[in-house]
Length: 65
Figure 1 (cartoon, rainbow, N blue to C red):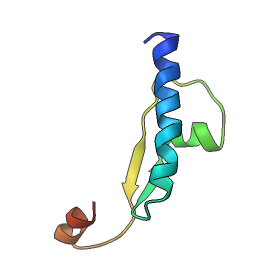
Figure 2: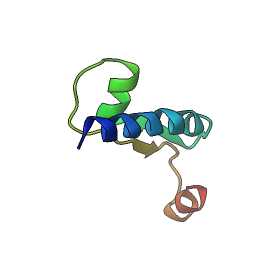
Figure 3: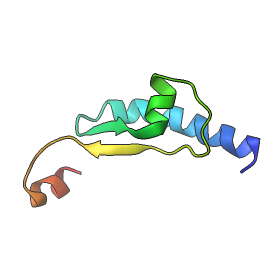
Figure 4: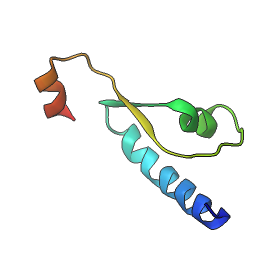
């Protein structure tokens, strides 16, 4: 992946994260979340790992997502 592609991906993630923060059903997790908010370390990949944070029966979870 070129440096330009990495920059575009990072900008897209930064644009999307506030939208996810306004959604109470999900929590950011994983290396990219750590990298953007806690530590600045080089990464080979950037993606958004989300966790659905409510414990509900399966059908209710799917409906909420």
